Length: 312
Length: 111
Image 1: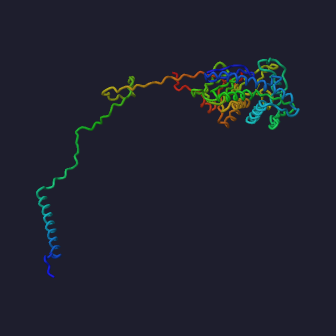
Image 2 (image 1 turned 90 degrees about the horizontal axis):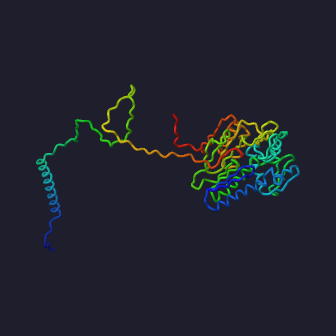
Image 3 (image 1 turned 90 degrees about the vertical axis):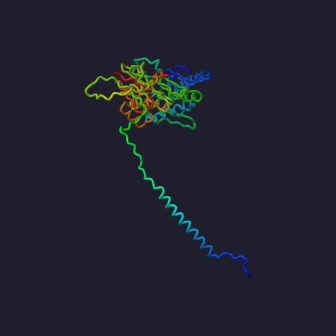
């Protein structure tokens, strides 16, 4: 087993390859380079990134973009479509207004509150696949916080998986290329947001993705009020929700990421109803008052003691 | 033309054959009758019925059973007839407990 840990896209990244092959080391290095390269292209916080250049050009017509930014935008539009607009890339301006105007590690509490207004409709983004150009309406700023990290992790896992069993952990969103070399699944623990050092469940994942969205960590104070990074696109403000965190297991990490965020933004009741129509998704919801809700499909992934010892 | 040897007439040969057959038949029937008179038929015996004075006891192989626990006697417990011999206790192998695998990753909100 070999692994490499580093920081990229504002998160702690760990890439694990289940192989003792010497070639695995260079594969790990290549994986790190992919994350760093994508961050240079897709980060809203880097003034020289291709995304920042596209954002600056909003309202000024089409901009020809590179393959990576083009695919990232298509991935974000896919998430917006599947989530009925709840997970949209058009929340950049709203995040800035809420105070999230720099990398989270550099965020300072107490900045002045900006006016919140509904995020622009993501369907106004115009894409020309022949010319590979993207046009943003005036005032729209793109942010890939809800999609780029999981998309990159899934891509890296897929590439590594052609040669080795691999797991890519991108800040808690996890992509698995396939079973480990002995055929066993990868054990992934779901952290308890109320007690981060403890686990709520141990999941056994053979393939696909596990993502957790939560408001327990990325939050800050702005003008005396707590803000967090999950924007309700209908209000343009951090979502008011009764859920502290949502974990979803899905056939792919981008799908899990989109679903986890959608359910958290919609709240427990509407989120569960949304999940009910999607039986291929398994979820664990933790409410702000400490309740834990598991969908029936999650049982398929949970490790259970085959010989439980009964008390008394 | 004169016949040097005279062949017997066809009618004469046929009559001789019938005479021989009839005689043979009579002897056969008579013989059977004589034999029957000499060896009277034996009476037909009924199927033998084995009569036993005691009820049949089936000899079954020993069935392993658990040794009954020494439960303190109570009014609801019915005493059973003592066994002639203690049945062998079956050895049961308990599988080794499965340990919880150590997690290789943790999923949580973005760090």
